[in-house]
Length: 407
Ligand SMILES: [Zn+2]
Image 1 (cartoon, rainbow, N blue to C red):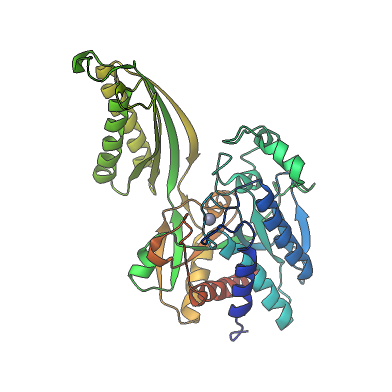
Image 2: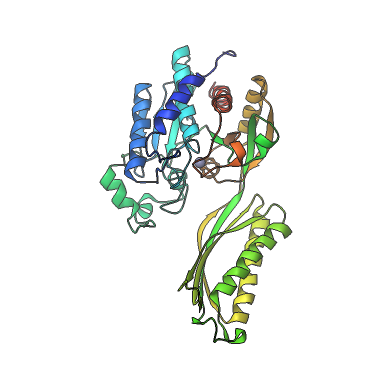
């Protein structure tokens, strides 16, 4: 069993085949959640699972579970990730985890290995949240913190609801994974950051994931002539928005482990010679420490109130996403560590900067993650790349740690 390895060529072939669904001209893919492209990719995964002899079940939000037979019936050890992407996504974010999981199943089939407890692959729906928020929607449903009927009512950026798309494209099955006991969940993913590549390390053993908050701010001042209105008479929503961008950077510098980003900012009326009446912007806050995350949000809101009051601009805010930091299960983290060592790969322990389904599941079952390097640390971009060798190393660690837990 110690010489058992996945087939790197086969895994690469599957990654290439999947990347043809929703392919963008010039590379990369667009498979926004609950679109035809997303559905075609999910059908492709389902067909692969059936071809591998897995028992396939789909729940009411569209999560797909493929389970392999074992010596005894018991809570399964699962691996997986997602196949939806952002609008200008790469071919690796999410897909690597699902396809490596399928590759592990095929490797076990070929070697005729029967595990003690079942192993399987879980492909989550709408991890990215680019069209419908919250992100990690599928794993939130599995954990039981998002009700399917509520999720169906959520409208996307285009006004269409999740439920309408689920019905139109037949995403749903009848299964319910909410109370399914899971012995462990392992997710292989590209790092989406520069640390592994920069330090020339093959495997990231992920111990924790940062907490994430997305807050939207709506500012309302008064439109005025850019030439005729004295500064002291202005209620400039654009000025307050600019101060928020600066404040976010200052918090990132002053609070340990903090990242704060203004990723969207729209001014209205958005004209060259008019003081902005309104501004709508988002702040993405991340920190591995829950107390520091609270501190960042409190200081952000207090700073915004002060600036807005002095400019006589009204502020409304709405929290769009609030995901607590997650610490992964020490037993699973150790299993990944042992597997990487046993295979002779270089590895480091690290915290994930990006959010993942594993972080959601960590509240419901033991979970851990395996990272492989991302070239240039680039992700959520068509230029995203990890080499076949890097992905194969991650898949071999997944295979070995999964076996260690499943017996
Ligand atoms: Zn992902």
